[in-house]
Structures are given as structure tokens and as C-alpha cells.
Image 1 (tube, rainbow, N blue to C red):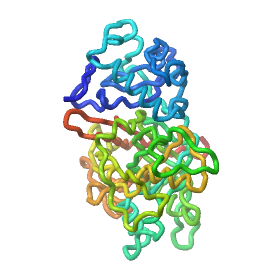
Image 2 (cartoon, helix red, strand yellow):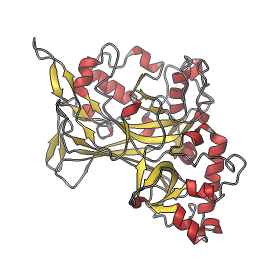
Image 3 (tube, rainbow, N blue to C red):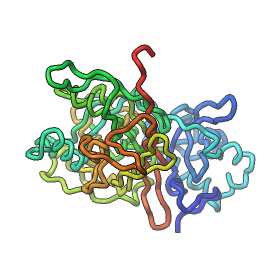
Image 4 (tube, rainbow, N blue to C red):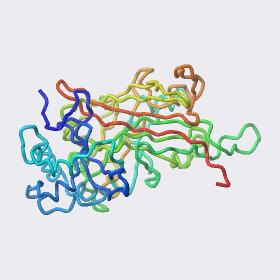
Length: 425
């Protein structure tokens, strides 16, 4: 039997009382409102600014804190796991069916519980830095086979460290933001000059991302066995990719314009506490990782993921991928520990993408590059053929853990492709 709230929560809701993901929102009403931190419960958002002002956060760490009177969650994240646990316990208690403090205060309920369809979701944190990893063995092998051949698809370093590159934080956007088709250079044909124009191979990437809590000082690393306490939670992520631009530019320094034009994240951060019941064993790591990556508590999370495409001009979306977070070879704690082993300082709100999450089967591949084998094949989407994304196409990513008595969901991560902006615009 799951926990029961006085707020009506449907059986298939992503946001029961066991979840309580954090986000930042503002009212859609005329004139809007200042951004406020909130928590999702059923089809409502609990305004944490109002709850804090009413004195309901009465624990020792949050009683006099201004962390929920902020336009982002960064201050709260910096406070660390003891404060996160205190907040979670308080919110679960005041939303419980048998607790009258909010249930029976009609005025406070009307101020603090807002229908989701009456608010606009914003980026939940100020993202100072964004790093994208490359942690699915299946995705790595498929990409290597496509671009280098089947003889040696995975580079020798990959099994020894979580490979990553530094992304562009300024172009990380919230779910629902349209993405303009990027322009750039592509491989020349024969002796001609490189192609220049709108990408012809626009792709999505099914990813998730960890949101960093407390950071570390420059020059001091985070031990892999302490990394858990530096991760607040996870979001869905779509790291849009222009495959032709990327293929031409990435040697020798890695992705640049083929990636930096847009990365979309879902608005709700699901905490690691909420995900604990869905912890599972990761894939076996062979060879055994070096000592600084050998963690005592080595876990992944069983999070089923789906990707849908709604083709331009159609009302119906088609599911094209069913994958799972548990396929990641390198865990999020190993990723964070490796990121800091050289003394690099992480900060509250930093975003650590997992890389494309592909599974072992044909229908679990996490991008069109793999699904169409770099355009050699086509997908049939209710009569519309696709090798790569066309203008007007919409990508919908969703994820939800399936428990016996409740579900822990992430909502959706969506984005629609707009035509390329011309040079004179």
C-alpha cells in the first residue's frame, strides 16, 4: 500500500507522495509571478516559498533558511543531504492524508497548491557548467562500428574511465522549448569545399543527467564513496545532435557546433532518495576499475525510458525506443568522482549528462544514428518515413519507475524542431 496524500493523486501519476520531485515555476496568470521553488504532487505544484513563509519548515536546518525564497534551487542544493532529508520528511508529512496542518487550512492550501496547468516550468537550477559523458557500452560500440568499423569499435581507454567532454551550459533549455535547426559545415564531397548550411542529419539523444549538490574546492577531489552525497537527483535529458556537423569537426578536439546549439532537460528533479527502492546492480565492469573508481556501494537504477516522435503535421506520436537507465556501464557516482580526480571543482547546480542510453536490443537504441544506422535505414512513423529529424518533428522523452504500489516518474522532456535561421536573420 503506497503513501496517501489529501491531494488527489491518480494511480498512474508520475508524482505520488513517494516521489516529491523539485522544480522552479511561475504563474501563468496575467502579470505572472516571481520564480518559486516547488514540489510536484499529483497534478499540483506545492509552492515552497509559501510553505516556508507559513513556518511549516520547522526543523533545525531549514527553520531560519531562505533557501526556498530564491528563484532557483541552487542554495537548497548547496545545503547537502541532511537538509534535503529534512525537507523531504516535512513535505511528506504536511501533504499526508492524516496531517491537518495544510489539509484543513483552506486559505494556505489555496495559496500553496497550484494546478500544474496554471504554471510555467522554468530551469530548476542555475547551471554553471555542463559535462556530457559517454557511458553506455551499447551506444559506444554501435557508434564505433558505424564510424570506424566492427574490428575495433570501442577505444581502449573506454573500459578504464568514464569518457566525457565539456558541453555548453548557456544552451541548456527547459522542456517545451523549440530548437532551431543548426547550420554548420559538413564533410566535403570529393574535391569540393566543405558543405555549409542547415544540418541534414539532425538527431536526438536519449539521456539522463545528474544535478550536483554541494561542490568541492578547486584542487580537492571527491572520493567515489562520498560522491553519492554530492548528487541531488536526476532529470531526463535530450542532447540534440547534428551528426554531419559533428562528424566533420570532432577530430581532434571533440564535439563543438554539432552539439552546442541545444540541450533540453525535464523540469522536475527526482531525488536519489525517491529512487532508492529502484536501485539495481550495474553491468559487470571488466577489467576491474582503478582504485579511485572502485566503489563500495556500486549501484544503478532501474528506470524504464521511452522516446516518442510526433512527425510534423501528425497528431499521433509513435514510440521508437524503449531503453533503461540500468544499462549504463559507468555509474553516476563514478562519473562524478572521475570528474574531480584532477582537482576540478564542481558547483551546486552543475549538470552531468550520462551520454546516450542505449540497450542491447534493436528497439532499445537511444538515437536515430543507431536506429537508422547513420541514415542507411528508415523508420516508419504512421506512414511518415524518417532517417533523421525534419522540421516540425517533436521529440518526447519520458521515464517512470514501476513499483508494486506506486510509480516514480520524471514527467516528460519535449522539444520541436524549427527551420534553420537564415544568415540575414
